[in-house]
Amino acid sequence: MFLVSLAFVTEAAIIVALIWKYVRTRDIGFIWLLVAVCIWPAISQLLDHVGGAMTVRVLHHQYVGFYPFTAIERGQLPLGATLSFMQLLVKFTGAILMLVAILHFHKRPKTVELP
Image (cartoon, rainbow, N blue to C red; front, side, top):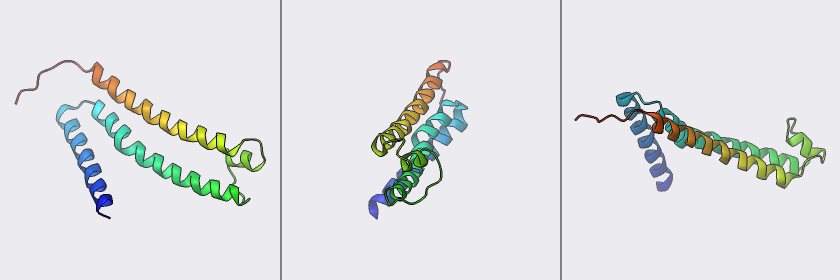
């Protein structure tokens, strides 16, 4: 329970720091970084949870009702390859979001902040 609390506090501190830095600088790169570092991992964890639940339903021959799980039910797609592809797609999306954040920081004009 301690590690969960520590992870939550750390995540909240990162969110506050990125928002505070955005408010001070108005650099959109901080918002993209917030999405890539905080928001997308939470969304991907939720997608992973839902995907796991759907996979269990497919394995128990229960009706899922949406693609790609319907294709797995009919034997048109292999389960392992589909799950691997979905996991790689989630990782790729996170990497693209991080790249967008980095590119926004790279494009910003070089200025010196005064204290």
